[in-house]
Length: 251
Image 1 (cartoon, rainbow, N blue to C red):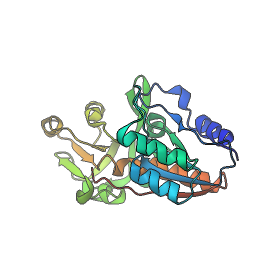
Image 2: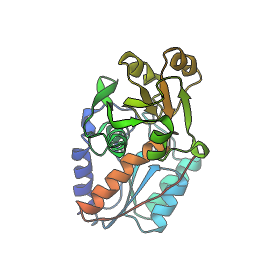
Image 3: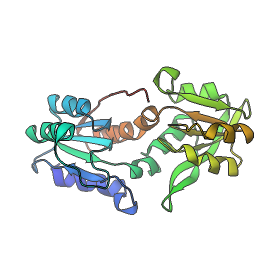
Image 4: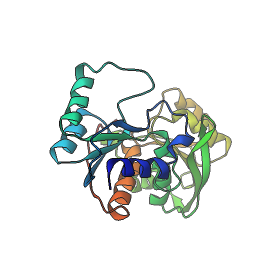
């Protein structure tokens, strides 16, 4: 599979053109149109992840958080070193932000729902008119601690919980990353718990006074699910060697 074939495949399966996203989704750094044999996956296009991917011989690095966010940026400083490392190794960078949150199977939110054993879930929470999250009923009632454990959330790595709702959670809304404000949608829909990545200080009293539970598992930890799902898809369905780079931020 060549660069162009793989990029088109990712672009189509993730329905990238359907989303109005500040991220420059798609191929952010190109490489030669060679046969792609190895693909690396990471949450962030940091120097750490780019270096590991290049040193391990990846032809392409697939990330959730890329390098370009809606405005031109000078190729200087740390940005220069990131781009140069990729170019020097003829390694492409493919970024997929909101479309990877929202995908009904491979997305961060759908994957968390599946990890919790939810056999069905409905769209929940919108971003610029498009649903990005999911809501539904757990297979059986769980505590906030049990939900956090199943999802791999840990207080050492960014987990924060606000627990003023039911001891046994039955219904949840899920939107990964920095979606703290969407807890209002969960409250409005009378869900037992809202799961996201980060929590804002201003949401504490809102959650408390609404008798609600909120789990913020850490921005990073809540967004490993989508890239790992795409890694498995790339390896099993496309037959390309793939590996995940865990550049933990604990945030």
